[in-house]
Amino acid sequence: MIQIIEKIIEGEILNQKESSAFIHAIENENIATEHIVTVLACIQFRGIQLPEIIGFREALLELSNTLQLNTENAIDLCGTGGDGKNTFNISTTTSLVLAAMGKNVIKHGNYGVSSNCGSSNVLEALGFEFTTNEKKFEEHLKNTNFCFLHAPNFHPTLKKVSEIRKNLGVRTIFNSLGPLVNPCQPKFQMTGTYSLELAKIYQHVLRDVRTNFKVIHSLDGYDEFTMTDATRILGVNSDQTRTSNDYLEQAIIPSTLLGGNTIQESAIIVKNILAGKGSRDQNTVIAGNVAEALHCFDDSIIKLEAYQEANQFILSGQAAKHFNLN
Image 1 (tube, rainbow, N blue to C red):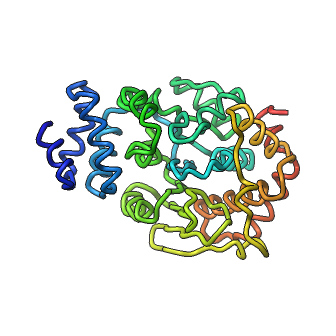
Image 2 (tube, rainbow, N blue to C red; image 1 turned 90 degrees about the vertical axis):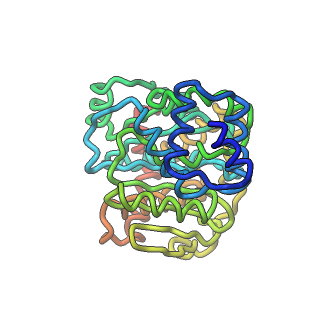
């Protein structure tokens, strides 16, 4: 392990085997906290590289608690976090709307580390209970088309570094890994990244493990499709640039997408949107994300029509009724 530490300090890239060994050392508690911090800080400062992502991902999935669910027609929606934009929970809200519209969503997420309200925080505040019971997950999918996998319940290794990540208070490679290590590995995925370089790494990794996917990076730094600026969307064999003009005459003003100052305030924002009481810009962004997610399932759909359908559905308040959040 000391050789890996020295290699990292010297700015070298870990190969896939070394990256996997680092994760296993954390799991087996064969590495000091100071060394974990050193590796995380050096990688973040230098920039994450493809062999490291692949090695870390494979090790985390190998060590994860298994869960057998039908993933053939399911999607995971998430952002890496760490963009520092303090938006409301866009991917979580999108997931709930999409599920209410009839699509199976198997979402993987965690408490906020570099933000004050991650997907686990807001869902917990809305009354969703975390479980590891496979039958309960099957019931959730059957009854609501939605289930949520709270990452620490399935990744013992992530639990072991949760305090370290919290104390650091900044994004690390674990932010980048989260969307890649859903224990169920749904066949569809829509994920936002805080950098274009990371989006390209994701595109490379997901090509081999997903039926269809979209990796989103807004050119003004958001790890979501916010329509505040041009957005790069990378797919299986595509690299496209979207603008707000695809759905709107003018770009969304960033300040209209801010989240709450507390977890409870953030939950209220999500609940209001689901109940059809969100602001125009909040509804617009969620409808746009729903349209892009629907396109993952069927790339023959007309996205503008999907956007209009999603917007009408959001305004109807049916999503809140679907999850008994009224």
